[in-house]
View 1: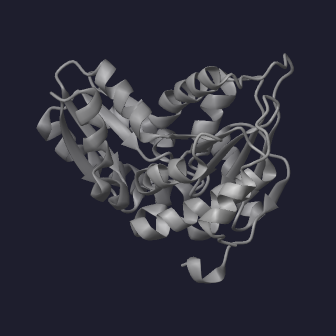
View 2: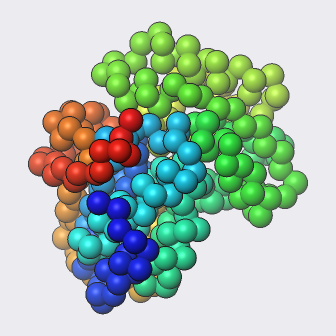
Length: 289
């Protein structure tokens, strides 16, 4: 249940310890592409992942709704005990990152996907012509424009929204012509603009990265959230002195707000690893569409 901000801050008052897990949340199973990269980069860390599948997709919600969802999920994760929060959702990062950082203060760090992706895109572009493919909510937020103005002010950004691609990727067990057509529609204006770098601005999109690459050609660099955010998470742990001392392989666990069995089936495809048991966290019914 959604709690007032004052309660959320009080929940975060327990001491932060190296052995605590890193918490990751997303609108569904797409953020598991981010988790996979984190598991590879930080093999000794423990992780807990919360997928808000009951309210998926986030890309069609308002910014106010997304802030409320993010605060609710963060309160649950902080109550479980965590040393770092990772927003593995572009729409939620765009809407809620400043709010979460303000309410958690210096107690618990919060890492979102936007700025790490923007920095990586700025590093790899050759011409400064960068494109973003994302959900309507992420494009409307203009958060990537603001991020690129900070890290690459001379770059030009072309933003293209896709209202159906994330849903198609999550719901289809096999990628069919509908998925290919959705990627083709997104890529057409990118080819016309001659961009050399494309940011996949949704955590579902890395699963169809090869389809994007085929549509765009080898000369276009593709930047995804997983590769960017895993580096940002490692850096945040280092500067806070919270990297795990354990030499054992870390553990990971899963929570979802929708059907646990659906999450387990779909999530196994996204994570490319077994999920095991998935616990359900109930959210208030009026928030679900």
